[in-house]
Image (cartoon, rainbow, N blue to C red; front, side):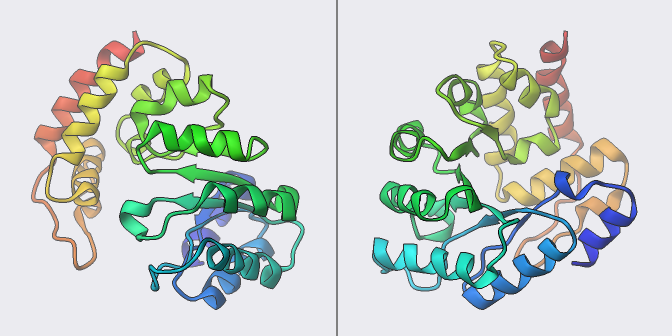
Amino acid sequence: MATIEAMLKAGVAPARIGIGGGFPAISDSIALTRAVLGLGLRHVLLLPPYFDRSVTPEGIEDAFAAIVDGVADDRLRASLYHIPQISGVAIPTTVAASLRKRYGKLVAGLKDSSGDFKQFQAFRTAAPELAITVGNEADIARAIAAGGAGTICGMANVAPELVKAMIDGKDVEARMQAAIDVVVKTPSFLATLKAILAAQTGDAAWLRVRPPLRALSDGTASKRKLDELMAPAVV
């Protein structure tokens, strides 16, 4: 909340800010979502509660419904967050479709970070009114061509030119995959991402991470590789 308040004070429009509001405890998701709606934000990305990984599709829908009903605010524009390889809980396509039918624009979208384009297509088929974004940067161009809404992705932090080129439909998929490999083929995606940001900005504060992550000492070599890959994309 302090970070969001600082951004708003600095002049960032609330419509340009979205937050991750998914917690194991439904009450925490409700509390944070209510708080940010009170500051003028609308977009909240919601993971399914993930402590119990043996839940049924009906239980997953019940959990999301409890959040929307608990927030009880028509300003909400929620996106469901499908990233089962991390959360351990997948969002069934039937649940996404049912929640959209049940709540309309309050359930505005879904982020598919499965990395499986067939899964993206399944969401599009089951719930065509949802704005489906992809987390896998290599899929951005074909996802948009197939009616997707765009991307929410980590590489936008360090290779925005490549992300923009993918959105524009340029033939840079191979370069994007190579850029992804620079970051992913390391012990920690997040620590590497922050080390690259430190090298790009000259601000060593970006190197800091929280446990259980361990900070990298330097991201200069990774930055150079990304610079080489991004240069052709902006010509």
